[in-house]
Length: 121
Image 1 (tube, one colour):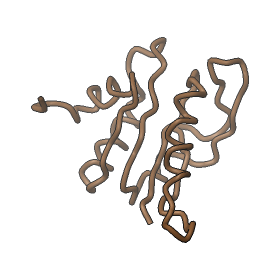
Image 2 (tube, rainbow, N blue to C red):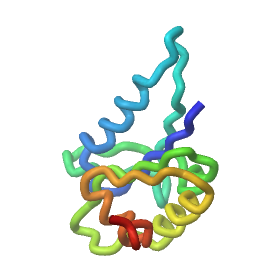
Image 3 (cartoon, rainbow, N blue to C red):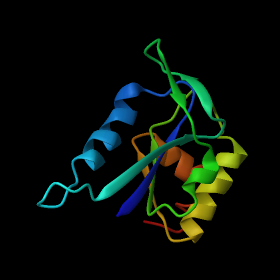
Image 4 (cartoon, rainbow, N blue to C red):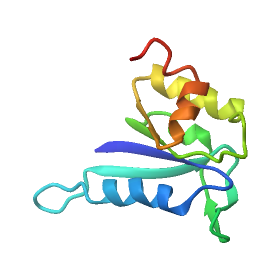
């Protein structure tokens, strides 16, 4: 089973969270067995406000990224000029452990801030 971690943050655009959740939920074997396990996490677990005026509750912290095969950063909050160093460290650690790190839309800026895009075309 492929383990996928999706990082949530205050100000997230709900659409950007729903897309990777919906896509990976649909990955199933011919008999219908799920092939992916999705985990939602945040730098600080708890209630996160979305930019749409409602909140979501995230139960897991960044330690949940340990052992993930794929980590998705879905967009980013442009009001936050620099991502939390704990997030950047967790992304670097996951990458060094072999996880594929995905920046969805503006999430690529977080990957750049973590230094994961250096020397890449």
